[in-house]
Image (cartoon, rainbow, N blue to C red; front, side):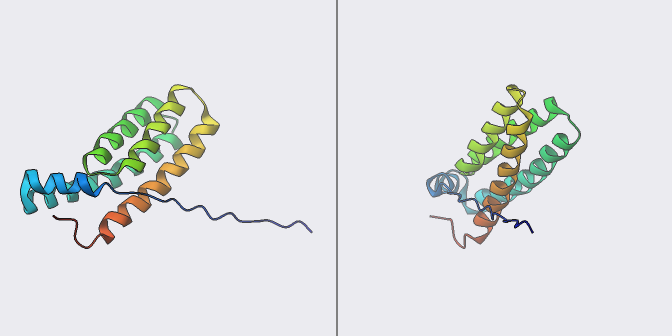
Length: 126
């Protein structure tokens, strides 16, 4: 009888609280909350779209979606998510489908964890 080991994969994410504070200073509380909420919604949509493009072998569209994830994540201080999305684009450019599948899986885990992390943040105002 063979034994199968299931490896639990967990991603650690760091939010840039200084970036969030800058948003609050620049936009005020209501404006910053609006920007963050819209960014979170867009991140969720883009993560799903990126994964769908991968399943359908639409590499150019997948790359474009991953690039937009970078910009949105950086805007609200999600550096880890931006870095992993950048790694996805590198894999696409290198035409490395094995690395792309692994990196995309990490992007989805990181994205989910990042979204939960920022929602769990009770008070990210100054």
